[in-house]
Image 1 (cartoon, one colour):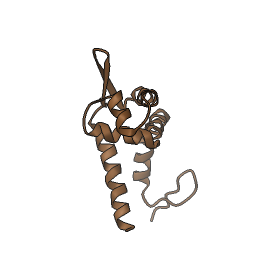
Image 2 (cartoon, rainbow, N blue to C red; image 1 turned 180 degrees about the vertical axis):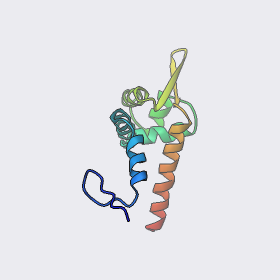
Image 3 (cartoon, rainbow, N blue to C red; image 1 turned 90 degrees about the horizontal axis):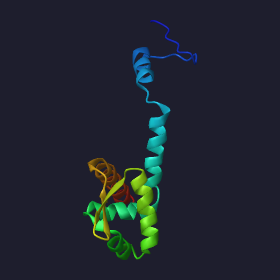
Image 4 (cartoon, one colour; image 1 turned 180 degrees about the horizontal axis):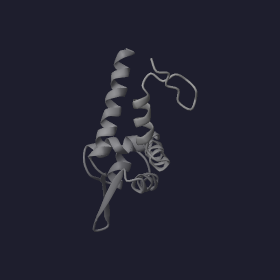
Amino acid sequence: MQNNKPPCGCYSPHPALEKRVFEQFPKDVFFDRLAVFYKILGDATRCKIIYLLLQGELCVGAIANSLQLSKSLVSHQLRKMKEQSVVKSRRSGKEVYYSLDDEHVEKVFALALEHIAHRMEENL
C-alpha cells in the first residue's frame, strides 16, 4: 500500500479526492459574500420580513403594519437586505414595493424553515 502523506504529514486514504477538493476550493471572496448573506439572515426582524415577502410583493407600510414596527425601522432593514441582493424593489408612484430578489433566496429560506420545523417537532 502506498503511503500518501499530504503536507500536513498525516496519512491520506484518498489523495486524489483531496487534490480535487483543494483545486476546486472557492476564493476567499466567495466565503466573505456567503458570510454576509447569512449575516443578513441572522437577524430575526429580517427573517420576519423575508417570511412576509415569501407570500408576495409588499410595500414598506404593509410590512411595518404586519410586524408592528415603524416604517423607518423596516426601511432601514430593507435597505440592508437590498444592498446584499436579498430583496429587490420597484417604485409605483410614491410607493416602493419589495419582493425577494430571486428564487434562490426563497429556496434557502424555505429549506431553513423546514429544518427548524423538523427539529422543533423532534423536541416535542
